[in-house]
Amino acid sequence: MAANHDITLIGAGLVGALLATLLAQRGFRVTVFERRPDPRIHGFIGGRSINLALAERGWHGLRVAGLNDVIAPIAVMMRGRMIHDAAGNTNLQRYGRDDSEVIWSVSRGQLNCALLDAAERAGAIIHFGQRLESVDWDASRLRLRNDTDGSVREMEAGLLLGADGAGSALRQAMQQLTDLGERLEALGHGYKELEIPPLPQLPDTILSPALREARARGERYAMEAHALHIWPRGSYMCIALPNAEGSFTVTLFLPSTPIGDGPAFSTLTTSAAVDAFFRRDFADAVPLMPGYLEDFARNPTGLLATLYLERWHVEGRALLLGDAAHAIVPFHGQGMNCGFEDAVELADLLSTERDAAAVFAEFQRRRKPNSDAIAAMALDNYVEMRDRVDDPDYLLMRELERVLAARHPQRYLPRYSMVTFTRLPYAVARARGEQQAQLLREFVRGKGTLAAVDLAAADAAVQARLAELPTTA
Ligand code: FAD
Ligand code: E0Q
Image (tube, rainbow, N blue to C red):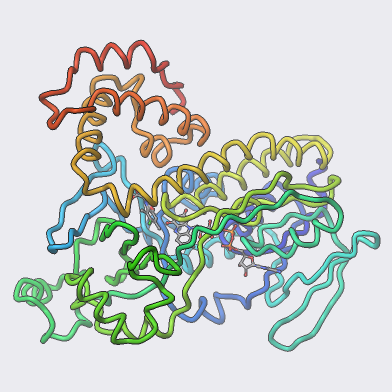
C-alpha cells in the first residue's frame, strides 16, 4: 500500500485509537470518526471508573506504538486471583511463576485518552461526536451524525477500517454489499459494575478493627491491591480489579433469567432483593461497598455475547477489526489484548506494498483462527472461574500442572500462561492446552493428592506427546 494512502477509521475506542497511532506513525493519512464526544474534554462515560486487565499481547501493542512509558505508571500489578469463598476466607492463586508473570489493571478511560493523545501526536485527525450512520457504496460516501445537536454530514470515504465495537455500524453497512455470515451467540448472562471506594472514603462505623488500623497507617486499598479478586459462586460470580487511586471496580456476572431457582438479573428487581442476595453470597464485600444499592439501581446491566463472522472484509474497500469483527465474552480478560494484536498485524500488513483486497484477505487468514481460539477459551474460562477454581479435582490438576511445567519448561506451559504471558498464537495455545488438559485428566483420575500421581509416567507422557515450544515464546 502506498504509505500516503487515505485511511478512514470508524471508532476511536481502544483498538481504533491504537491503530490510528500505528498507521499515522507509518505515514498514512488517517481520519477517524468517533461517535462519542472527546473524553479528554467531556470525561469518560458517566464518569465511572472502569478498568481492564492488560497482559503481554496488549503491552506489545503499546510498546510498538512507543506508549509503554506512558501506561506503565498508571497500571496496577495483579499477581494472581484472590479467591473469596462463601465463608469469607481468601486465598491467592498466583498467575505465574513470579512477579515477572503478572497482569495489570488499567483504567479504560485513562488508557483511551493516552491513545487518543498518541494518535493525534502521530498526525491522525480525529473527529468526535461523529457517528457513522450509513455508507453509500456507489458514491463512496459516508453519512455521519452528531448525536448531540442532530447535525448530519457527508464525507468522501477513504479505505474504510471499522473499529467501532461489537455493535459496529460499518459492519451493518458492509452487510449491504456482502453477506458477512454474522452469528451472535448470547451467553444468557449479563454484568453490572459496582464500586469499592478507596479506604479513606469508607465510613469508620462499617470497618473491621483491622481495616480501621490499616486506614490509620495510610493504606489506600480496602482489600489486597495487587490481585484480581474473585467470588466464585457456581453459576455466577463477582470480580474486582484495583484502580490506581485506591478504589476497586467490582463486576457482578449473573444469569439474565433464572437457571432453576437461582438468582438472576430479571428477579433482582428491588433493593431489598439485591441486598438479601449480596448479604448471603458476597457478605465480605458488602461492608466495603456503602453505595452498592444505588450503583446497582443506576448502572446499566450489560449483555454478554460472542460475535462470529465468516468474513471481515468486502471488495478491498472495508475491513473490520477488534470487537467489531470478533466480540468475545470477558472471562479471560483478552478482548482488548486480542484487538491490540489485530492492530499491530494490520498496520504491518498495510505497510507492505500490496493492494487492499490482498491485505484484508491476509489479515483475516492470519487473525481469524486466533480470534476463534480466544473466543472459545474465554467461554471455557467462565465455567472455570465461577465454578471450578475452588473445586478439589481442579486444584489437584493445577498442582500437577505446576509441577510438570517446572520439570519440562521446554514442553509444558500452562494454557493460561501461553494466553497471558506470551504472544504464541491463540490457536496454538488452545491446541497445546487441549493436549495438556487431556494429560492432566489422565494422571489425576482417581487420585486424591499429588503424592498419589505417577510422576514418572506423567513425565514420559509429556516427553512423548508435547512437542517443544517455539523458542519465540
Ligand atoms: P470498543 O472499545 O467498543 O470501541 C468502539 C468505539 O467505537 C467506541 O469509542 C464507540 O463510541 C465507537 N463507535 C461505536 N459505534 C460508532 C459509530 N457508528 N460511529 C463512530 N464511532 C462509533 N478486554 C481485556 O483485554 N481485558 C479485560 O480485562 C476486559 N474486561 C472486560 C470486561 C467487560 C465487562 C467487558 C464487556 C469487556 C471486557 N474486555 C476486556 C473487552 C474489551 O472491553 C474490548 O475487547 C475492547 O474494548 C474492544 O475495543 P474496540 O476498540 O474494538 O471496541
Ligand atoms: C484474567 C484477567 C473480566 C475478567 C478479566 C480477566 C479475568 C477474569 C476472570 C475476568 C482470568 C483469570 N482473568 O483470572 O483466569 O486473567 O482478566 Cl472475569
